[in-house]
Amino acid sequence: MTAEHLNTEGALAEVTRIAERANAAACFGTAVVSGDRTVIPVADIMYGFGVGFGGSEPHEMSPGGHGGGGGGGARTRAIAVIEVAPNGVRIIPIEDQTSIRMAAIAFASAATAILARTLLKLIRG
Image (cartoon, rainbow, N blue to C red):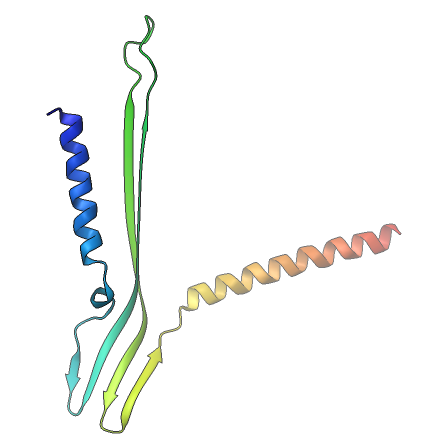
């Protein structure tokens, strides 16, 4: 076995381990009990992976030419809590204020650009 083969096997084994853990249970945190209430945190979990390999036929000027690479990432964010109480169950969403503000800025920017173009067309006739 070559070192290249071992690295590929190791990477595939790690991706497999992560995929096995990516299930619905991973989205729910440990329940916290306080008196007659239980609160369960809920998260949004995303994984992403990519690999690439390149190469070219070796020639006189460059004896190498083969390569490879890979990467991955994960993101988690709290999206809600589930409250279980004697009077019922409630799902309490957690608002992502940063995303809301970014969407508002994007909308305002697009609206301003459209308005500016429209006004320029009207002014130019």
